[in-house]
Length: 220
Image (cartoon, rainbow, N blue to C red):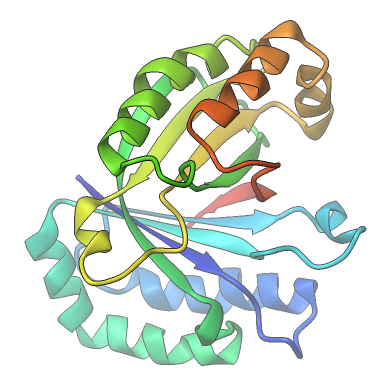
């Protein structure tokens, strides 16, 4: 299964409310007509996330396909091309980041109804090679973070090797975790398991706090 994640920032002249409404109610059904899509999820940033200012991204689009050939046929379809043109109505195309990813499920719990999802934009420590970074993130750090009991599901989305050809991608992957609520997420930060998780981050990540958005899913 092939997964494509697109990081989306709205047009500067649109309010968050108008952006989310257009994306879900008009663009979503338009893109859904394209062939080969097995699953399509929009993740919209929570309104309260803007209280301190603009977010790095306003949401993510996640699309699943059977394989590369199916994805190629999707890109060549008229329905996709119509939806791609429609992006200009609500998205800042210059800020779009497309990420083909390999998904590693670290904790496969049941996601509650109306759960919130934390998306963290991950970059490896400067000077760390890609293979050791991926191995450490998945095999060492993943099991440490999975012990945070408030996390219902935890996925690591590793950027595919093909995305590094002839360019330096903005992110090496996405860490995605699901919680029952923002209150549960906040309480988790007070636990020893969370502190151990944070203490391990300098072993493989860039210094400082990695950017995040907190979202809720809309299955299209």
